Length: 473
Image 1 (cartoon, one colour):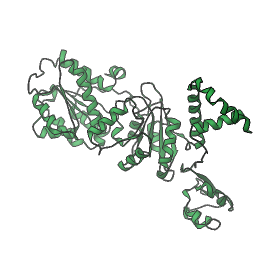
Image 2 (cartoon, rainbow, N blue to C red; image 1 turned 90 degrees about the horizontal axis):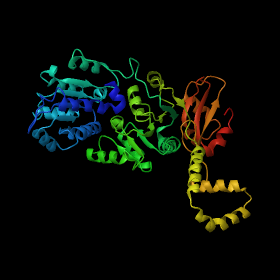
Image 3 (tube, rainbow, N blue to C red; image 1 turned 30 degrees about the horizontal axis):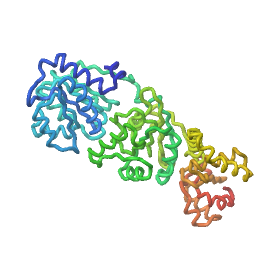
Image 4 (tube, helix red, strand yellow; image 1 turned 120 degrees about the horizontal axis):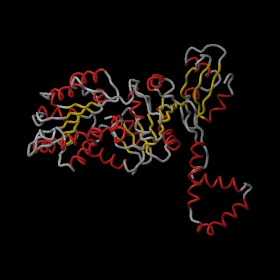
């Protein structure tokens, strides 16, 4: 099983052996056939997307062998699923909730079951499917006649319990990472970057420009409102979350795979099960609640020997990502927000590449204007060409961005004090002695320094001189 997983991927590593057993192996003789046949295979998965993808593999490879498959999940019509089960199927793939519904309605018979597969078992635990999974597995009357395969990225206590309860006593466990803690891919560079929630819409497009390398990007956020907000401001981005109808979700993913759009904004529904291997960039808008979530999100990039980039944003006032760094084996690279000058440089390189692609046939048409520009300007030809590249890239000026909150047209200021500062309110009080009240109220991201004798905060670039005029700043 380990060799198959490495060569084929996890899904085909269990799909192909099961199909072989049903058609040429021990399960062939006892497999039911004909109208109304009971399933020989049950596969449980945590999400609709993953269920659809696994069912697609069974349909492609099993269909060529004369085997039928149906996929059962919520958010799709119940009637067609019931009709398929009544006609009889060899393989049932689905999510725990919908399969439980069909079981309790008497639509599924497990008496002929030969294989049952639990894929992403730890994710089923996280999504609250514990009772449903145990009820479904408990419906098999004679488990000694059923081979059970369980796949899990981690081994929390519930996964160990169902392994002991539902797998055979002589079960074998294959660990691809041994007894080590769950680790992140070594093919991924992991960056952390300070950013307040209000600066995300400004910052994320620039992160994509700097680190996306023209490839596909997934942005993970914590709320559906954030999904809608970000997807609405990013050019060509689409959103994915639980409230979107399944048919629409399938259309979105179908367009995303061939690259018809390059940026997907999603909740964790997209963290697992996407059959897309060539993501260049993963952006997490804030540190997740647990290490496993971070690793699964980052696992969307850096696959099959390719390199990838994972950028995690955090609010410097409240986020602590030390535990993720410690338990995941990740060594975060601390970076500041891409400055507009960095973005402009990248855009300039692209503009230069496009100029080289332009046909020489245009030169006679524009040569006279170019010569007139050279003759009338005090700038060198190189400087003039630089301005032409800037114009082609859409830049007429370069803005600034703070290091603390990543807000545009803001700059980070350090206030030093000769004695300990005990609270941010003390800083504001000190600033009011030499800075107008409205300017003090406009500062962003105020926090104390590690030694307790200073503070850092962001001010609008236009207000910088006002703050620098005060003593001690």
